[in-house]
Length: 183
Ligand code: S3P
Image (cartoon, rainbow, N blue to C red; front, side, top):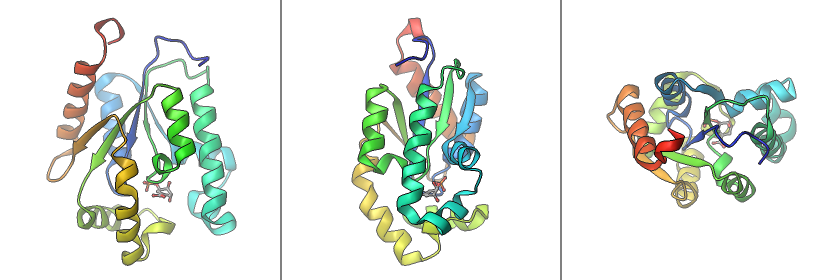
């Protein structure tokens, strides 16, 4: 790794609607770290929205762009700062991305919620998601991904909790698991 050893990175993992971006922003603000959303990194890099990339290049094209964005983000020495990163819902499911994160010794935190709740949150937040339009496909994808999500370093149940509660829980986990010299 080329980044300074003193910088810390926490990656939020979870299905669409898990709250990765809202919890990520709140966690970064609580810790005084920077926040970064991988979907936004992809959009900036490609000059297109995620929906446009899906429409033009299908899922395989999006996944290629996603892996490149993740690699670049981890190698970006100009980001010499502590960082909370919200991954996309499918990022951690791709074995090559898990390998990249493992090699970077990344701390990964899974935000869990039941599928009905995830669907409700996706409908409420108004974001256009290519993989969330069909309820049956949404539910199947959720089931298929569970085993991969469980490989995250830490897991936090978000059901019935406010963003601040989830954030406080993650901050607690980080305090317990980070050596004092790196806090
Ligand atoms: C995806 C989730 C989306 C986005 C893309 C694919 C997925 O991110 O990366 O539409 O495969 O689950 P969010 O989880 O932030 O919605």
